[in-house]
Length: 246
Picture 1 (cartoon, rainbow, N blue to C red):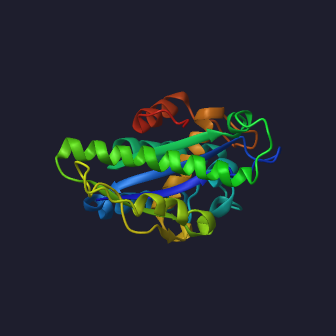
Picture 2: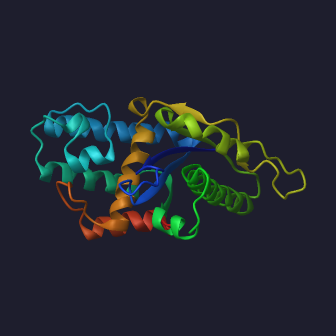
């Protein structure tokens, strides 16, 4: 069984000053590799402690790029934060037995499809990207079921600070069961599990990947302390393996 940890970048609002993209970012780890993956991520934080004398409780993407969060008021230089970013990409691409599932939707493309005003457009936009994202992830599980010859399923973990509108959308997938399908047990199961991102290195990793995905789409942001080298962008794109836009 896979465990899919999801976080986001941007917001699902459609006001003129809202983010250009809404990005859902997921890190999937098979349950048999859960502990091994956790300890590799924990070991990376111990490496940061030894190198910089810095104990980090929450390592999130925008904090690395903008010198915020647990990195604020530290003596880290942009070159140090760039090192953290690059080493984390190397860890993801070379050592962690995880799958990366990213889905980004440009708001302008959505608005251009509906020239007439919509009732509650933000809700429609949010539902659209979540359904497309979860549908694409379930297709991944169905493909795995065919290749392994037995049903593959997954549980979803999500940042509890964002839980207001998500549970009903995920239940659309977890509450389906088609006895006539080739693998009726395949797909998303149970209810979504809400985690505090401060307590989950996996949700923080999903947050980091969402920040990376934004920079794959748009390049360096105006407040960034450093730019991701092209070779590291190519590494993470190869690990993702699919188009980011949905």
